[in-house]
Image 1 (tube, rainbow, N blue to C red):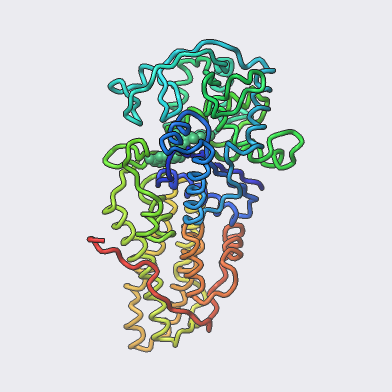
Image 2 (cartoon, helix red, strand yellow):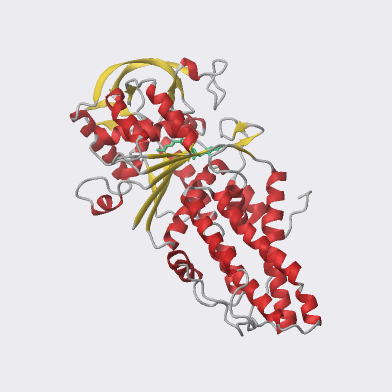
Length: 511
Ligand code: MSP
């Protein structure tokens, strides 16, 4: 089964921040999890490099647009590497194959009668790279960037969006429609449908005086509007064209991920463009919320950003990945603070997971000379819990409810810690109770389940735990058997455990 997942392609007007990392890590966790479930995954991310905003940023940095794009694009690539992102491809809109694909799509739209020429007059927010209607403004400013949009008037080509209104309504609202696109979360789908019902207008899809873009094939004096150019990345990167086996295999996308700010482009404009180009439509579009700082969207324009490197420095790669996805529901906005991050790190990672591993291994060392003991009862006392957790976990991830998925595992870990308290192995050891072996064997079994479930979000840590509990075979193989057949190999008595430094040293309040 194939699974094609995408992130937005990020503007290269400035360095990556944790807002970008949020979407990318989420896509990475889903990609890793689907791979473990045996799917053939293609995970795409990249950079959006044309348009007025990039041109202005390059000018400010006294670089040519391409030089500037190369620098910032390199920063995005380095950030994803540092965060252990496993994208299968990285698309850049300045790549030649992409430019060719944009021209091919534009030509197709033109020939299919979806494009006409006209005059555009309106207010343009260069930071959003979009026209804003009067009703969108707050105190005369763009609500996201808090800056005044500029008046804009020129001859452009227009995409006849209203032609697709009825079909879009049917596709988005009817779950049984053969081309149905699932927009999640539901509330955002309702917002989109509400706006769609109000009616659509032709949209300007070219620029007359912006050379930093893809020239239209039918009028080389104009370049493609940066959003039209950008959306096409989802098909250009997989070899758009009937002759391409890769394209045939992968398209349509199974999931487009993004924040709510750009849902309209993905839920309305992109599907309409695909219809005009006679291509199948994506299956799922998920819009998550914003990371906010004191209630404002974190953005380069507002200058209130936290960089992925800052998070990694403080919490490690896995800590940063885990915290970003577990702090609040993926669909909602969430206010970020260092205090909140520290607290979650200490509670979930240092105290719960870290302690369970460290206590269990210490006891095995102390009571059984560092070897996993043979249980007297041949089954895990906590087995029923285990199966419920796996089912919940898979369902939650399937619906992109990361925080619930991780909460389920944290509960499992917490049960294990409680089990230590209630069974009191130190007493059992004093009393020479043979059940001590069963308790410790059970704990190793629970640690193994936790490591497997957390593998997509904390790959390095889970590999390390795997080695600590003495496993020598590949965790990914066992994880695959676990996710596809529900099989988790039991700990083998006699296996030597390997104690190591604490997985997650506690963060002190002042740090
Ligand atoms: N280039 C367009 C996207 C084109 S996709 C065909 C763009 N780029 S962007 O650099 O502004 O990135 C927007 C995306 O970055 C959001 O949709 C979201 O995925 C992520 N985020 C940027 N800031 C964010 C927050 N403050 N919080 C959460 N996600 C954020 O729009």
